[in-house]
Length: 190
Image (cartoon, rainbow, N blue to C red; front, top):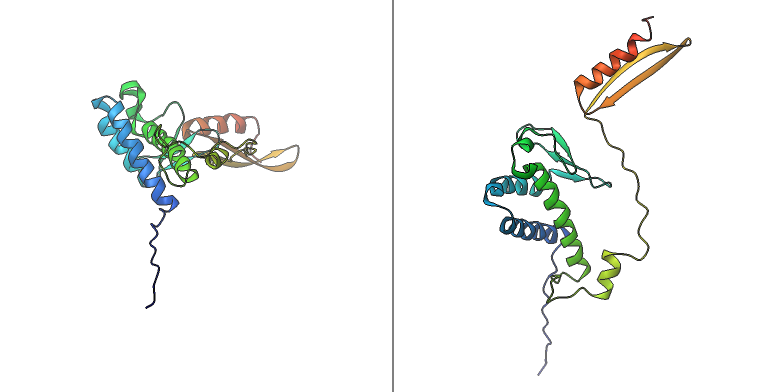
């Protein structure tokens, strides 16, 4: 008689699955904490975040996709320039909520991954190995991200007989064009 040892292993969730679960958990927790008038915006924020519509930058600023205009992103940190932000309770539009969900879900997912995919709760403490992953003793040197400006204008001007390309960048087309016109007024057309 031959004895066969049979073992089963539970597959570990992928990083994407861990993040998706963390995003759902964070959204559920936020819904329990936020007042009811924000629940519809929170649902929209979840949709934006779950569809990859939030890009976090190194300085805690996020580019958050518009819910209504394809290809449009709002620069979001403590405030948002969307129309809804001025109407939303406490200025918490869907874009600000989406940024918050992604920030917190990333922290939760990182903690879970570092802790062997075990939950990080008062009942389930963080392992010592996880502490080093979550909060390393020597933090990495942050790199300065380069942002793409939502609006820019280019012109060639003559400066002391040299042809120079001038680029003016900003967040608003009208402001960029006004600044460009001011500079161009100082240099006559060749």
